[in-house]
Image (cartoon, rainbow over all chains, first blue to last red; front, side, top):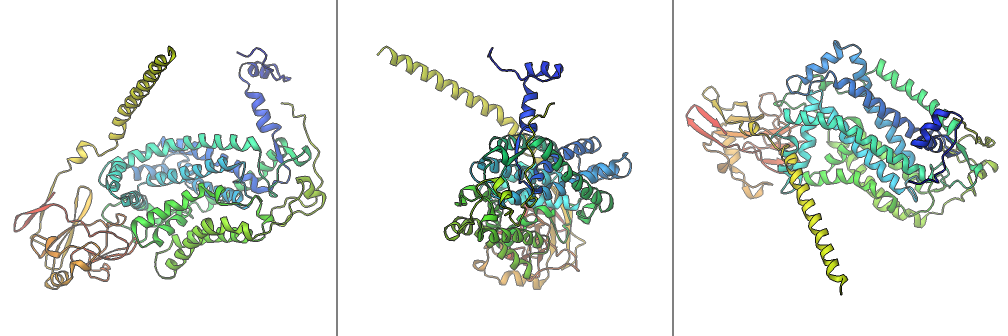
Amino acid sequence: MDKNRKVHQFKNPVLNWIEFRLPIISYFKKEYGDYPMPKNCNYFWSFGALATITLVTMIVSGIFLAMNYTPHTDMAFDSVERIMRDVNYGWLMRYIHSNGAAFFFIIVYIHIVRAMYFGSYKYPRELNWILGVFIFLLMMATSFLGYTLPWGQMSYWGATVITNLFSAIPFIGEGLKTWLLGDYNVGNATLNRFFALHYVLPFVIFGVVGLHVAAVHVHGSNNPDGIDIKTNNDSVNFFPYMLIKDTVAMCAFGVAISAVIFFGPNLMAEVDNYIPADPLVTPAHIVPNWYLAPFYAILRAVPDKLGGVLLMFGAIVILFVLPWLDRSKVRSCNYRPIYKWFMMGFFVNFFALGYVGMLPAEGLYLLIARVGLLYYFGFFFIITPFVGWIEKPSKLPLSISDVYAKNIAPNIGGGEKGMPAPAMQKDTNL
Amino acid sequence: MAKKPKNKRRDFLQLSTVTLGAVGTAAFIWPFIKSMSPAEDTLAAGSTEVDISAIEEGQSITIKWRGKPVFIKKRTKEEIDAAKMVQASDLRDPQDDADRVQKEEWLVLVGVCTHLGCVPLGQKVSDMKGEYDGWYCPCHGSHYDTSGRIRKGPAPKNLDVPPYSFLNDNTIKIG
């Protein structure tokens, strides 16, 4: 091995002992201590950390739920009710887990909105964006699998409808569906494998999150002005500044999620899922979880089975190529006077799609869904590539500290207006 | 010249190693993939015999066969006529009523919507039966006629007819 390797020296001899054998201490110091963050980052930049904390919370609460859950069609529903009534603090574990899933999606959606509005997906962070979309896909799969486990009416019929999407594929569709279910319809074989996959996928997500974070640390975080760090004056160390900021965000998040867990634990639940699964009776309205509703609206907006399925999956797949659809070199929408409004329109449109996705697909709702569908794909295929041609971006600041020097903090998410730059702290001794 | 045959030998070894490795991996993965297909006991779900003597004209019952609902309906004269009057060529999934029944008053269907697998309404007197007076799927709005054929909505195909036979006048064997 390399005899000339330079070993970092710390004051603590135990750390030195570890560092010599496994240089993990210097790694953490570099990536989470001295790591430079753009000093203009606002609270939107806390949602990555919040998402990570939520993922860990979901894994921990899920493991404890699994200790009392029975993945069998005859016993699954009752075992969940037993968790709610008899298991010590079982109700708390379950409400943390079910509401945690909803909040996980809220956080990740805000995280995605931030990445889109401030252009974090652009050069050199494209791979980071791709890994992020991949995490989003894994999250949707995991939440769908998990929703099946309580074996209520919505669980059963949600699983039936979603697995039937695969039967739309020509020639191999029916066979593929049967293979996925392990039966000709959703049954015990399906519940068993869904439980196994629901248990393992979060660890896969955890791994991809590791890559996602490692990738962002290569070029550093983007910021509300979308310009690179040029000098030390543009950044602050992650520790303690951003850690403290993320902690404040986490406290606010903790208050929000606790309010729901303790005072409205079923606000986001479907009442039909408290009826045990019945393969002979379909509920009058099958509603997906709200966080999947925009994609469900797209599925139902198309009057053709295969077409609906293709567009629904296409709506997610299109996200992967966003960095190459957007030809503008300017990252932040704060400096893009036209695209900014189309971008906000996209967020409103996505919200509207989600809203109609929860309602019956008829009349006005169906019309809104179809208009929303056109805007969704129009945004990616027409607006995003071509707005750059007609748009004249505002003048970018010379550097991040320049934003503060001239006191021209942008109106959206511009951080503390006109604050002097905090002094650099380099002596973060562990 | 001395080097060339040596390279060929190296290429051959490399290619055969990779090929053997790929075949071996595929052979190893196959049992895992196949284990997810329906198990033998699931395939052997068998058949069901149903007593139909108590079903009145216009009445329909739901029974469970291989985990799925099956509709058995004794159709009225008007329903049979309505189903026969339709030109098969006008339909999305063209099929004559005669091809869907063995005895024209008895209609046997798998009660699973061919769109995304919901159970259509229309079995109870109080149910919505849709615009063609057969069945109506509440999930995404597919309308089926009195022969269980798709007439309106997103479903691509007619309701399936399961394999069945009349053991005698009062008993149907499904499966």
